[in-house]
Length: 329
Image (cartoon, rainbow, N blue to C red; front, side, top):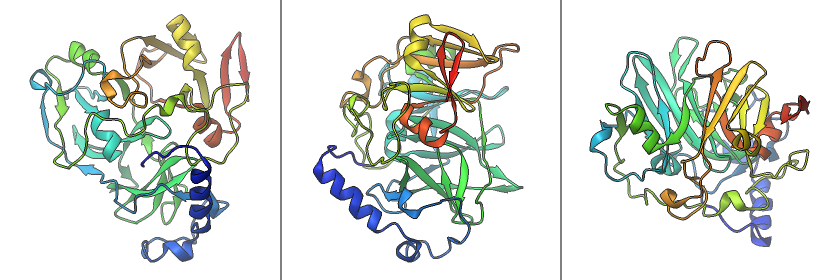
């Protein structure tokens, strides 16, 4: 979604969008979506992000090239890494996901959706199989709590990206399985996977490598968000590491580089650029790379490095892992 200044004009835009938040208005664009089935309590929670349905074009079955042959991506640029046992590791660059938000792919026979919501900094990979059916996801153009609302092309149901759950239509209440992938720098991916593969640049007229949300993660408030701000004085667009319903402030993790608690081990290392800072992604401030593993087995765990306001919006009773054995709601 295109970022506008958080100003009086933005407030009017929110009000106008809220006025159009109704199935009666949407049914012409979504004739096959069953709006009678929903967990959305108030339709004004759903706002237009600007582009219409598929105005942000999701990708399917992308092409890949050898990581060693890629020359366009900056060393510090973030990528979402998918490493399945027995398969060639794959990198999905945020320089492409910023403009497409969803990549439908298949790795080792597993149909996956690699997703990135810039307004929440939320990057999650889901298994696309649901009740024996393989779904294909697109971008609805709608936002809820500033987070992308996805839809599946098979049932036209709406899905909340941050929680991976159906919120409107036949798939309401169905939960997607999140997979243990992570975001890291391009240099880190190449160093660990010299024989890995990277998604090739899509054939769309987009300014790949540029960040249309310049300085977004330095804003005082998130865009198109009317909910409560996080507790404990936590800055709304600061990053937190979410594992289940727990959130560790990135600031706390970066100070120690390693935390072991609640059955998980979190590590942090410098070297990854923010995708939401400088106008050129490769020049973004250093936010580092987070890895999350099971503290006992060392296995990678599904997680998300998202903005604090989004965690509070979707997990209002979640645990804030603030240190000194404090686990506050």
